[in-house]
Image (cartoon, rainbow over all chains, first blue to last red; front, side, top):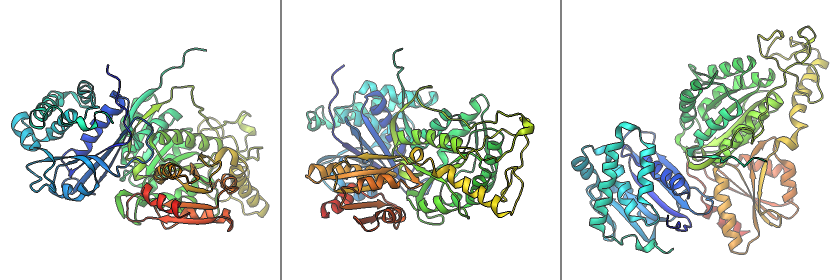
Length: 195
Length: 381
């Protein structure tokens, strides 16, 4: 295996609406990075008291050294799955950080430098269920972030999920991976390659 | 020596770590009532306890009854756990006092949320600190612990069970929403790697047994109900045989012993972690999730050439007075950041007696204090 890239506080924020599977997405990705890749990872979450609707947010901090402060302060990657979330958290994005949006739901991106895919539509049309949307996001991020080993991530996705939804999610993961490669290009994550 | 066994690694919530810790410590009874943000402890207990040999899980009708359930189970010889948050913690106070008086070992986890009353259910807070100390009525001793990361949730839960059993007392473990709802990679220690303490049971024949007899440690042996030893359990002030008394010399003997059994073991109970405090002239005293912000702020201050340090409190009460006095040899400024209007800074100021300058950072809007807020105050000196 290739030696692991050294990271110093790489911060990712997933944000959107309650019910979109944002916290599950953070959990799966955190599990993959912590157990599969061996990084230090903290995943924190904040959400409203509502069961559905309302806002939802999940922070991942990834580092090769122990992490003290568990929340994200200046983001390397912001994943915004709703217009409101995009507006709220865009100011926290580092200069040079990447904005990833749900291009159907975020109609007015605050910048023209963003990476977008219509995740919900893709999940509904190509995978068959809209709920697999978060796994499509995971797939596309696995292409974007150069320190993620796609095979390891796929394996830990399978380890976390219950048997009956494994196949659907594997399909969604591959879809995200493939489309990100096609739409965003092969060297989209090159900025983080050598850090 | 045999090769060291590899510890199992999991990516877990703070609440999950509490459950893992409880099971490792030998917990076999959970009585509770769910409340955000502590619900995961109950959910996971409900699935895991029945899979153990003799584990019993019970959901009670409310928090008052769940305290009653765990006190009963503890008297029957079980190691017991319950978990709650603010509003439930208030309800548990009455029976908590009973457990102190009846010297019943139990562990009560309170995951603090923001605000008072039902407040901010999904936001962090640290507003229950003095309630944990003084919430139940009467002049009582109590042990209050806290944890600031997921590994500590596991470790401190084991410690809480050990202290409860060692000193026959309720132990409160204060977490906050951020610590409880953070997922991190933790290592689960293997059996034999950590100490597990169980209550002393009487060795004399049942007819000689006096349930509340004076002992050197101040902790009388405790037989499980139904093992042949007879004893009477009451919340009334009682004599050595466990029956109510109002005779001043017997009252004072009981009250003295209740306090002494905790106070005289301060070196075992008062746990702190010192980070770069040896030469620090500015020390942050913090606990819970805020201690993590403080740790980063201290690192950043050191990078700027400021001699900063962190005293992280793992035991909140009895307050680690000696450890604070130790850092005050060098410290000119003490900073106490907390998610309330200054509940722990009271203790700090009491010990400080005007020697160092004590600055407080208080935040009560349901958000965590960020490292940059603490750094700003450190830089001001």
